[in-house]
Length: 210
Image (spheres, rainbow, N blue to C red):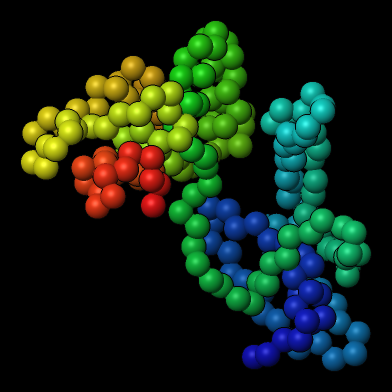
């Protein structure tokens, strides 16, 4: 089925939130003369959405600033900020939404008083008090968000007999564990090297990130 641009915008003007319950997308037919937005599922209509704002030159730092409600909406103006969802099409799934848990964030976190640490953890990872991150990315070996350059193995140790993550036990691993606990005991983690050790690369360069 082909949908022209106007038909797509009309069909997309009503956003859908797919929660834990499986929701069947409404069917959509090509509009004729006076198109109308598709019906919103009854469990979506009226559902509230919390808006959090972080803005430069303000006191807003992940601050709850507004509550919106899902409702029918006509053709938006070009000046309006909108998220378009075509309920007739399904594409890739989302593993989660989150942020990077690097040495920089872990070391900065460790310097904060306990009350501020709890405030940050709740704001990012608590599903009720905050935005409820469900995934985190962290670095293997040092990265450009580390206070020093280090690796988990000694120079030239191709057998990895010297492998150790002792460096991470001071700040990053405790930080990750607290984040996981705040997220309800489960937090998908994606670990990746920013750059392998120099001896594992043909150019023998510590700094090359390729």
